[in-house]
Image (cartoon, rainbow, N blue to C red; front, top):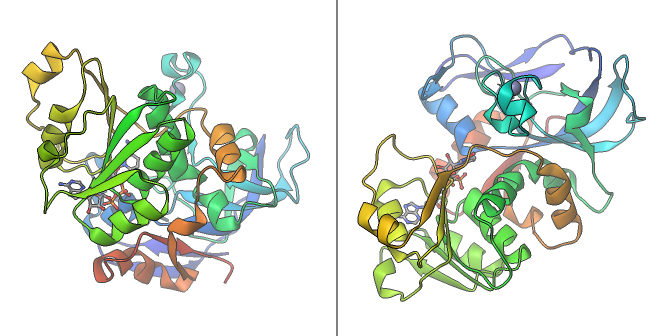
Length: 337
Ligand SMILES: NC(=O)c1ccc[n+]([C@@H]2O[C@H](COP(=O)([O-])OP(=O)(O)OC[C@H]3O[C@@H](n4cnc5c(N)ncnc54)[C@H](O)[C@@H]3O)[C@@H](O)[C@H]2O)c1
Ligand SMILES: [Zn+2]
C-alpha cells in the first residue's frame, strides 16, 4: 500500500509499505477520508508535541473513515463491507483507568499518528473491531472521519454538563471550537457566544448556528456583558483563557480543551468566590455512538467544515494549507484518490 511517511521536520515521503494484516479481533479498513488536525501540523513542523517526539519514520493522521475489507480471527460481527468511522486510540483495557471507564486516560494508550504509532495517511489501517463504528449511508466519508474531532466536542460538553437552556462561551472558532459550539447547541444550549480573532472563522460560526460572535481584537470580552454557565475554551491561547474565566457566572463550569502553554495565570479569586469548576479534557471516551447519531440526525454539520481535499501525494500541501489560507478550516486527505 502507499503511505505518506514523516521523515523528520518538514519532510513527508510517499512510500510503498506492506499492507497491514488484522490480528485477533481486528479489522482491516480501506481508508476513505482522513481529516488533518493541528497536531499533525505540529508534528510536521516541530517533530514533537511535549514529551511525544518523532524519533523514527511516522505516518500521521488520526481522523479517519473507510470501509472494512478483511476481518481478523475472532471478530464477532459481520463488518466486511461496512463503512465505518475509526476511533483512533486503543487503550490496554486492563489498567485502573480503563477499568473505571476512563480509557482516554490509559497510560498505555496507542494512538494513531502519535509517536511511535502510525496513523491513517495511508491506504489501509488495522483497527480493533470495537473501534470501527458502522455509519449510516447518509454520512459522507468526510463526515465519518470528522466524528473524531466531534467526539472532542461531545466529551467537552459532557464534562461541562451543558444543559437545556445553558449559556455557553466558546473561545476559539477552529474546527474544535466550531464542533464544541454545535454540540453545545445540540445538547440544548440556547445562547452560545463564540470568540476568535479571525473574522472568517467567526462567519463560519454564525453560519453554523452561533447565537453571537465576537472578534476579541475589536471588542474585549469584558464589554460583552455575557455571563456564561459554561466556558468551552478552544483557543489554547493563555491570554484568552484568563479573560474568558473572568466572564463565567457563579457555579459555572470551565472546560479547558485548547492546549496552549504549560503554565498560565489563573484568576484564582474569581474561581474561588464564584465556586467555578475547572477541568481539562483529554480526547474522549465512549463518544462515538452519540457523535454519529448527532451527525446522522443533522444536528451537527460536519461537511461544512471541509475546505479542501488532497491526495496521498499531497499530504504536505494539506498540512501547510492553513498557513497559506486564512479561510481554511479543515483539509481532508483522500488516500484512494
Ligand atoms: N483536549 C483535547 O483532547 C484536544 C483535542 C483536539 C484539539 N485540542 C486543542 O484544541 C485547540 C483547538 O483546536 P483547533 O484544531 O480548533 O485549533 P485552531 O488553531 O484551528 O483553532 C484555534 C482558534 O483560536 C483562535 N484564537 C487565537 N487567539 C484567540 C483569542 N485570543 N481568543 C479567541 N480565539 C482565539 C484562532 O484564530 C483559531 O481560530 C488546540 O489547542 C488543540 O491543541 C485539544
Ligand atoms: Zn488502560
